[in-house]
Each structure stands twice: as C-alpha cells, then as structure tokens.
Length: 362
Image (cartoon, rainbow, N blue to C red; front, side, top):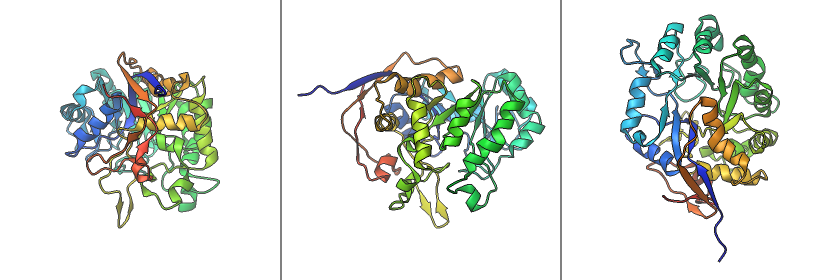
C-alpha cells in the first residue's frame, strides 16, 4: 500500500475571518481550530460595528475590548492570538487612534467602502480619513490599515465589466494616493481578486501586503454563473481567468513575501433572500485543504516553500506576530465535507462532498 503524502506545517493565522456574533459563534471558532489555525484577525463588521476601542467610550458601538472578550468566551481562548480591527466610522478621530495604540488594544483599523459589503453601512470615503488626520495618526502610531479595496457608488457597468470593475478602479485611482501621502503606513489589501490589484501590491513598497482567499485562487466568474452557484457569491466577486492566473503566480512564487492567507470565511445561515444574495463564502474547517488544491492546480504543491510562506509565515511576519511553534499535518487523503450547523461550506455549495486533502487529527 502506498504511503500517504503528509505535509507538517506551523499552525497558521487566518488574517481575515468573520466570526459573527450569534449563538453559533462557538461552531465557527471550532471550525478554525479544527484546521490548524492558531490565530485570527476577526473582522469588525458586527451589528453594531466594532467602532471604538474601549468600553468606557460613550460612542454607540461595540468596542474592541468587548468583541475580543466575546470571542474568547466562545472558544477563542484556545487561539494563541485574537486581533480585532477597529471599524473606521464617521466618529473615528486621531485621538481615538492615538489612545487606542497607547492602550495596546488597537493594532489594526479596517476601511469599508460605504455600503460596499455585509454590514458596511457606517464607513466614510477615504478622503475623509485623509483630511481628518486619522490616517496620519495611524502612520505615526504604527497602526495597520486594512482595506476592502473597491470603489463605491458606481453604476452597474462600472462596478463589474469586462474591462473595468470596482476593485480595479480602487487600485488605480484611490490607493496609490494613500501610499504616496502616508509612506510609512502599513496597509493590507484584503481579498485581492484582480490582476490590477496584484500588480499594484507587487510594485508597492514593503509597507503594503495582501490577503488572498481560497475561492479567488480556485474559481472564476464562469464557475459562479454556470448553474448559478450562489454559494460562490462573495464580495469582491470572483473575476476572470487572467485575474486568477495573476493571483496564482503571486502565491506560488518562491520570492513571495507580500501575499498571505486570509480566508474571508463568512457564515450565512440564509444565503439567498427575495432582495438578493448574501456576499461571503464559508471555508471554515477546510481552508488549508482548499489552498492546497489551488497550489496543485497552479503547478505547485503543499510541500513547497511557497505554500509554507503563503499559509504560515508571511501573514504573521507582516503583522509582527510570532510564527507558531505548534504544528499541524496536511494529508493527501480524502476528507468528507459536511454542514457546520446550518452553514453550507463552499465545497458543498460547489457540488463537492469530499476534498483531496485532509487535516490529520491531533
């Protein structure tokens, strides 16, 4: 009998994940732990948004202090690290950034284009944060800027077209100004989907890094439209073959130090409604396996140094976090995919009830 292929890796950080706030949060956190995840950057687009740092602030938002404590009490205490970004709202001020940095609770602040994705109704334009001193305060205090990189307020043809789209516009017209105005500001370009954004990160200074999801490495818009596979509907949308190829080449490069794993895993108990489709793919429990498949499809392998850097090393390096001393094992063996509570993992939504790779149980 042929011996199973095994890859032993440091436990990894999911640098972009949604843990929500409902009674199923322990399931979502458990799914992270089950796939060898040691730490998370847990997105702040809760309801209300996590728009202040401490509980003693009178603003009508959740605080980083509160949401971090909630995650810890729901099973997150088994993680070595929980980073909750500050949701940038109209009430965010330079003094909030300065005090938050001084407290040690604030590490990252998240920019959402107004109304651009799930629970993104509280943000302002980038121009506001340039003019009100927030970005300058972040640069001076070492707070990382995490961006959902899409232009907002667009018509349908500008939002998604063969030659243009919201992400392309953002990386051509908006973010270059931020990098030029605030050269020491560290920026994470979240969930890249386009060749344009990938080239921007390649050419940007070392202060700029990026996360890439499993779905954007595996699929194109054709995969979503063929049979209308709505479980692949996420924001930003999956794009075209040349975009996917640019992402793949970025992550499999032996010289990759800028691109790292951030699943953007987002649980939606109800994916479709009368007025549309919820944006987000759930990859809890199966992300390293999907990344492994994407690397194989790209001509690389999970036992390559490029896979190790992408999944386990580049993210903590950019955030200034320690690489885990604990290990987990990927095995080239089929793993069944099942619902987690009422949540449909992406592979099931794409008609796959097994994965080619599995996580060896400890």
